[in-house]
Image (cartoon, rainbow, N blue to C red; front, side, top):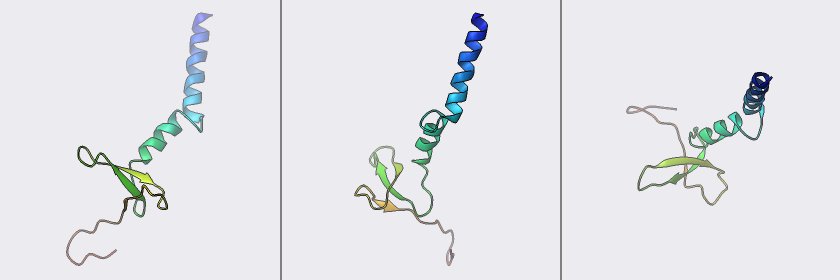
Length: 79
C-alpha cells in the first residue's frame, strides 16, 4: 500500500511539473528564455563589471539599455 502511495505521489509531482502553466517546466523555460535574447529584443545587462548577463526587457521600459541586432560576418555582408 505504501509503495502505491509513493508511486502515485511521484506521478502527481511529475504531471504537475510538466503541465503547470505557472511553475515547474514552464517557469524553468521562462527563466532560460529571459537570458537568451533574439534579434530585435531589448536587453539590460546585469553585472557588467563581472559576468555580464543580458536579460530581455520590454523595449518601452526604462530598464532597456540595448536593442539586439543581427551579427554580420565579413566585409560587405548584407542582411
